[in-house]
Image 1 (cartoon, rainbow, N blue to C red):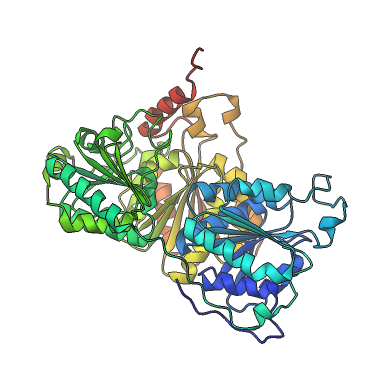
Image 2: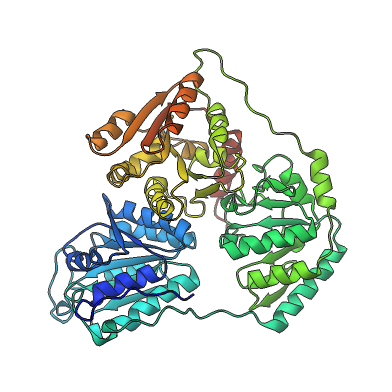
Length: 578
């Protein structure tokens, strides 16, 4: 990875500008930030870089979510906060990025470099003369942590942290003493050496042995299946999976958090595998297969539907980021996923038996019938019309909750992108993520439009960031699904805590607008109202379109009912007696 660095005169080159240049070099042209007195001098320097734009957010949690969304599209994101009151607020979003394998640079202003030896108690802290609490907190959810207290080693520390984030695809933490940001140093005065990341190299002998074992297994298989997981996110990984599928002729399914990573119009694509809540027929084909090549899968209680899958390691070839395991036994390390898939594609023999089985059982897609006049809008009818909205230039973002289950059933046309936060599942993630994703898309694909599906409970967590969208001219279509509570939690374990206060959501968004920016709102309680609202929103590509749809509190997908009961059973297991 090598990129040309921006240049300034030696008089201008200071630590803050050097940080900005390094971010731009690795493809991060926006920083999501909230000002505070420990990072103000640093923000002044970041503002000077002509290729780095600042996006000022309402709070640090949302700024972190926005950087998460930006990283999903651009490959790296950045959030800049102040010390403790800002850093601790952003911590939850950074933990989510860590869980979801997203390179996210956290830059925090820190105490003056002279304060560390002073034994003083500072504001914004917990009242102790211990300035390492924030650093220790971020150690739990970042792959690298550096504290820049001396200008002499700033260059090396900064490069180490950013490199680790890119190599390990995890967040990195950079704390900058508040009095250093405008200082110059000879390391910044000359053109910096462009980034050149160390490459992890496959062990040739291990690769050959892994391919040999996999070919032997597949040669004995009757109806093998290819299953793509979330760690195939990188374009090279997706290409390698596609190449293997084209050669092998196996049917292909994706796990829920990998939706959109394999072309859904491909003739071998079956749908989503998620145990008992899979796409029609997919569970039966996958779990009856004698060999499943699982690529980049991460198995959690959520992805296994409360540990209820019948798919067992004994009949899987597990292809992880740098390891291949055959049948839960033989393991071959130092084998990169791409290298293995490409080498296997060179040797595998076609076998379409599983695909024939799937096609024999598959049913043509169907749609719910139109609603009666005056009938309250049904959730399945809502998503029928969202399906019709999807085009090759659409990006669909789903909030945690019943939106998961409904959007995962939609078929994406080639080019349509999809995002959800599956492993971490932080309610409220999508509002900030929509902001960051839209900022990234506007930079690289201005013709695309984001469609977001957000539940009312989730929206109340992070709603204020819609004002930031209007401030920066971000124009998604947001469906606010108003059913009066936390539906996903109702189906796992119900109680009075799952009921929320109903808002005038369109009135709230209009108040955020306050005459500044471009906003259009609508409310839909019936199917004709929904159809009219969607048609109008599509005519307004230069406005943020906010459509509140009202559904019954008990109207949810059958998949959520099944999944919720199984996850509840897993959560409620009693301790094993001693």
